[in-house]
Image (cartoon, rainbow over all chains, first blue to last red; front, side, top):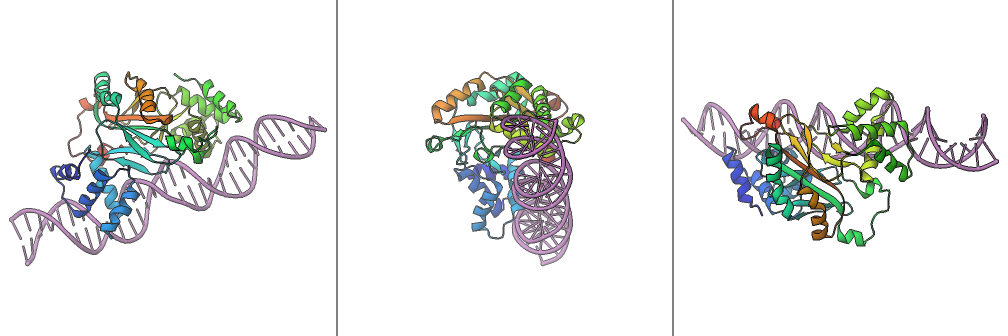
Length: 156
Length: 156
DNA sequence: TAATTATTTATAATAATTCTAAATAAAGAA
DNA sequence: TTCTTTATTTAGAATTATTATAAATAATTA
């Protein structure tokens, strides 16, 4: 579990100013259970800062990603990039029916970093581990028939 | 290593017609060492089929993804979605400097499916396992200074 | 305080992807 | 084969997430 403070402190240590907008974005990212998109963050921060601009959201996200404290999950069926403030190794599980993404601790994923580093010689900066499928609830509601239609998956 | 035949047979078994355009796209996907984008596939297939449309590329990719024989890696620093015809468990490694993506076999990743299925109850349909960092060559050429600037990463 | 610099905002621009409708090709029946 | 029906492709328009730009604002320093 990451705290809002870690995010804001990271910005500060990178020489950036701690503005109220950035604090709000960091707080939302750290405390959100979902894996928000820029648009979702925008509409939530807008409640506190009605004049905030989408550009500020994108700028701050980009900075946090580049500093390595936020990961990018990519699209998850809605044409929007999802972000994850939890950068410790874990699996993200997206349901293609209800479009929710949940976190899953994983014994194997915790070892991946070292395995990859040792085998490849890469200097790792981030990861995007997203599995997709049908969650138990959506399976019970009736799984999609094959061949799958676009509206049924949407993972891109 | 997947073969072009597996892809075309999958289309056939799903009740779709085997057109020359689809065969060409399947062949390219299966034989490509890179992890191509729709635009890249388009320009390569265009050599054989000068009249092919981008819409055909997108339609075929969408179908193959929905049938589970092609995975979506998402953006890799170039604002374009990358595809991977290798759906057996492996790690995709993207270099944020040279923007190349390579495959990496992984002992841990091969076990992830079962671990996730057992722990979550999800019915898994696909995965997106992309790690990003600096490849050995780009490390030697000089790693980016912190804080990272946008043009240096580009993973989104 | 004034001067400087970083940040935010609003809006325009970009471009990947999707949609639409007409044209074309394939499959099956007679 | 030819006719009929259906699937597919094409070209181009439409959509929309994201990025870029420039003016306005806020923070910082002296």
